[in-house]
Image (cartoon, rainbow, N blue to C red; front, side, top):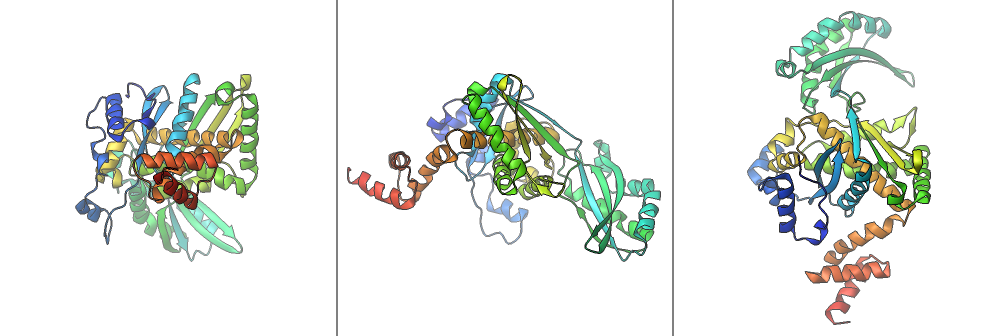
Length: 421
């Protein structure tokens, strides 16, 4: 476990100094070695996907100050967006006063769908399949004895009749505990193996046999309590709660609110070599309840006026297989977190998503989102305008002072700076 995640002043350090500080915090001089050059050579990249022509770099930062379930943890985040790492770290610092983040999760259950077409009697077919439920589950389990050795395997099989606009579908769902894997390959293989028998029982033909990314049986939860005075006072908490209520009620606000959550979640998912698209798909599908798209998180004013923020969503990530095992930088990122199971990783990711969400809503409720975000973005604009070395901070400061973080202003100010104006 990290000695402490409370590493203040990293922003003002050089990259080399930051690496040394983080490595010292986790007690491993080589902790970040694979992250220095991205950890991916062309030969390895060519084995990961097809038609490789190069690689793209994404900055990896370390979010500090996190205490999750009583454990000090440093969090790797891969993102191109300014302010994300700083904002999550800042809220994690505020959360320390009440013990940090508390998390929980369900078992790592993934589902595969077997879609059968050409069925005459869908209700009768449903019962015929369920009558053979135990035999079908046993057949599926035979496909992955290694998973059974690790305590996983099939947990249930059910059958849904999906009806919409006069169309009727028969869909069997296989529920599989995938342990420390993301699980796509395991459940897809099982679905393929039993699809013929399922279709035979239904009197139809198997069509689609694939997992669903609506992983609503694989939920992660995070909760945090932050004192009102740390956030800026009771009025700020009230404004945050009101803003979060709009996200719960209005899909237009919810889309941006949830995007803020995913700023934190996707950054950790990407850093650890997991599937960002699968997690994002699961999250946004979970945001739809009773036909209404709303907020994934909830904000309340707790006893004593403290902010109580909670988040629950599907997070299907793994520690075995995929890029998590094949990409050295992803392995280094996972090692930095010191998690032992995929469930622990998912819970940590959920906590980071909640931290990012609280940061964004606080900024909107207090000083406005632009003040903090654009101050960090100003450096990128300065670089794009051609600023180098010390010029970057000088031009960025001028942009922020003028409240005009734009390329044309940056170019003008860089000319002025170089001319001594």
